[in-house]
Length: 103
Image (cartoon, rainbow, N blue to C red; front, side):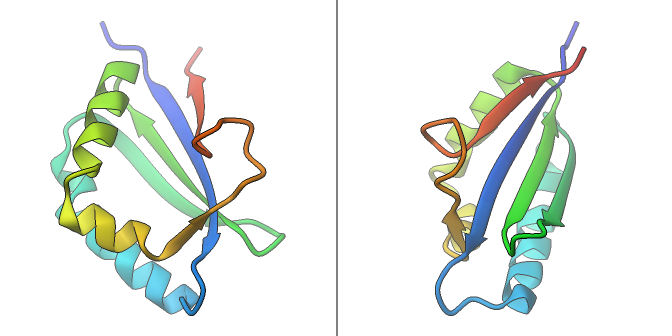
C-alpha cells in the first residue's frame, strides 16, 4: 500500500526569465517528463503573493519521490526547466524542498 507524499518546491525566476518563459518551460517539463512518470499523482505550479512561485507535486510514495528526483539529475528536459528557476533560500529544508505525508 502506498502513502502519498507532497513536495513543495519554492523558487523565484532566474535572472532574465519571464513568467511566459516559465509557463512554456513548465508545460514542456510536464508533458515530456512528469506525465510519463507513474509515481507522480499530481503537479501544480502556483504564484505566491511575494513574487515567488511554488511547484507542488504529489507522489504516490516517498520512495517514488526519491526515485524520480534522482532521475531528474540526468534528464535534459528537467535541466532545461530547472535552469529557469532560482530556488528560494527561505525554505526550512537544506535543498529548498519540503516534504509532507498525507494523513
